[in-house]
Image (cartoon, rainbow, N blue to C red; front, side):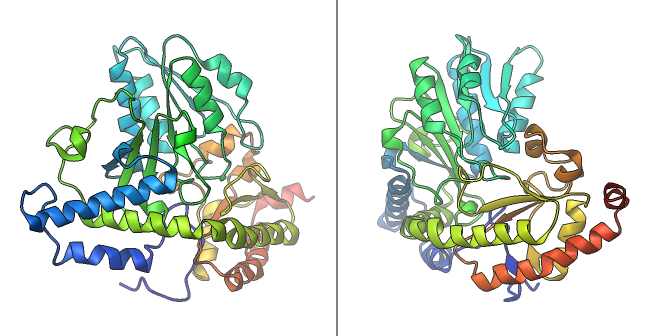
Amino acid sequence: MNCGSDKVIYMDNNATTRVAPEVVDAMMPFLTDCYGNPSSMHTFGGQVGRAINEARAAIAELIGADPEEIVFTSCGTESDSTAILSALQTYPEKRHVVTTRVEHPAVKNLCENLDGLTGHKHRITRLPVEADGTLSMDQYRESLGEDTAIVSVMWANNETGVIFPVEEMAAIARERGILFHTDAVQAVGKIPINLKDSCIDFLSISGHKLHAPKGIGVLYIRKGTPFIPFLNGGHQEHGRRGGTENVASIVGLGEACRLAAAKMTEENTRVRALRDKLETGLLTKIPRALLNGHKTERLPNTANISFEYVEGEAILLHMNRYQICASSGSACTSGSLEPSHVLRAMGVPFTAAHGSIRFSLSIYNSEAEVDFVLDKMPAIIENLRAMSPFWSEANK
């Protein structure tokens, strides 16, 4: 298997990220010599337990939390489900969930299942978004009711990078006695977060979105927040999530969070500048190209651009010939031929929604890579449009 080619230009970091070399180094002892069970009474296992606690502290530091508010899970999806289902079990008389029409499938599909669950009569409010992907705060306020158990709104959209005002939304929910959860999988490590200054009750993290391995996540649970575990078993995580800890990945996530804290300025300066150069170049060089999402209220690494009258899958196939990696939407839905539910919610025209490409950069991208993409993309789109009857019809 050849997965190490230096020629690959990887701009699909919202799908998954490269595991940082420093993270691999931090993990290796716990995949070899330090194999003790962290719950054991002996010193050999105890040193593993201390490594988990050090990782917990590093994660808490990145998001402005206390270490005891950090619960390790298997992924962001588990964290999302745990938070929402806990709230519904805590308040069984409350059957209402407020979310948005642009959530990741981890929340979107869970809410669809709750909506259709026979005999439970859950009520789901899905807030619409504006054409630029932002939310109406007036509509949000009006959506909250006496029977609302929890609000679940992502911090930043995985397809467009649009940032939602979750701290303000959480404060409003707190005033109404409603729990608030945010899927912050895309936001953590890219923008500053300080939960000590917020009213957020639950927050989800996924390691593989910030240069840690796949298969490790975090659920932040604010002190004092009522909580019912999703996965019962042993006493691990202070009884909040059963199962022997994934030690190596936990240690890796801790190291990734230390790196993210150190690289935050670079993420918001150099990476943002690369994103802006790529975005401006594509919009300038290619006619009928449209930016999807708010111009400024967006993650520093993400650009979602529609190329009218061509298919996103065809674009990606042609990009793949040059080993340029990007996405036509969420990695969890990109196998579908349907237009992105995010872009449909934004009202992006059908002729553009089908031709959307998400570029998501990281600290490992270079200006030379951006230049290469800008050199190849105009010809790719031009050639595909030459074969498109829709393009011919539009340009008669």
